[in-house]
Image 1 (cartoon, helix red, strand yellow):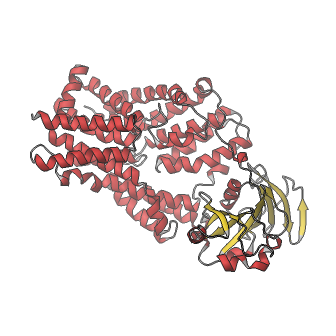
Image 2 (cartoon, rainbow, N blue to C red):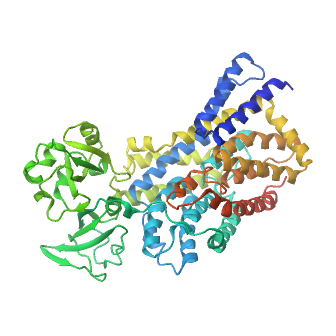
Image 3 (cartoon, one colour):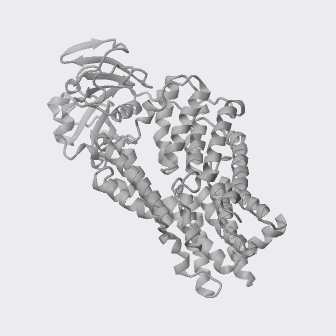
Length: 601
């Protein structure tokens, strides 16, 4: 064995881990830097060095490509609000904190079994936030279980996490007959999910103090009056205000209903909605975005339908009127604002206070904040304009394409069925072959626009996986994987179970410190080499890597969803240790006990 390439490869991996852990460099940049060093060395050492072809093979890996395609599928589901009904239909009315946790975690786990965890948590967070405030339950007792449920649910299927897809692809590459079927992983994942949810329900309140949220929507001083119209074909027609979920909106209240010119003030919860009702809401901008996403509600201003381009290509934005605005002495209607700027004003805020009356009758003053709907081009056109002091897009404010929701659900169902059938027939890369048509159908049926589909791909994730797999190839070429295996066997005194435990522990330690995907692709070569050295079936060790890489519970930095809930939940790093360490032990015990029974050594 040539020692220099082994030492170089292991040093590069160590430097990569240090860069991610201690210097907080992005994982993609750190891994690409390590891969670059190994590729340059490969130019001078053709025998033990990494060739460009092998080093870049990770970027053409079917698993990595499948993850990229699934981002487009998830974008289509999100933009059509295909699962937005979860907030009303499945959450319901909790009897207490434990009931709320169960209602939060079960639908989250079910969704994350078939979708990438990150968009699932992004979808559920605003729903859970509003729901918890409505029922006066601390969001800090719900957000961390939300993230953990997404992780646990992702352990149950082949497509549950992007890491699993990539690792399974490497497993097929190593042995075409050893790939996992769609639900085969559930033998380990479902027990982990059931025991994990039971643990969180029983011990979250005991182990996790109630934290104050880091921020609330009510901290926003800008308040608008917004008029929404009930569409004639809306599912809200005939429902009461309470049944429609319009009574307890966080940061917003229903002030009155204008019904064919007759104003109904002090609206009661039992009032029934009728077609073409105009609902006048008062609240903050974040809640205006939430209103836009309710099926059957649309802004009442007819100016929206006179704008250029389809509404699906627009978004909400805020602009502050400057002293150089050319129409200061004219009402919005007289100034023909829509014609000049191709933007429709939905509401106006002055000194943080709502302005009553019709939008068209308001005479704008310097300092007024306008809430508008227009195309993203407005921002580029007016960013440096003297007419406005500040122009900014309201995050996640693109109108939801509710009319395409049923198409998105059908496409998702077809994807799941296709992946399952292809897998059962022994087709290689079944997930990719099912995901690619699903993504194209999402674009074809306008569930996701081509530009949105391109932006939806998280290139950081793709780069981490591609570069990490390249470094894994370097470990194989330089024999560094065999050296690491020999060292681990000496530490654990050999044996199948001790090696499996060591693989799981190493993976979960790296997962919680340098991110799940980086840990998985670095430990994978060691697991394969260990199976070869011990002359055993590699699948139990692969499952240990999969479960260890998925089990990012003990730190907020190891996985995206943990970071997403960190600030909004008001958590501290120690909170993740309180719940995450016991949860990691549960997953480890289940993996070590069940995996060898399903996939014998």
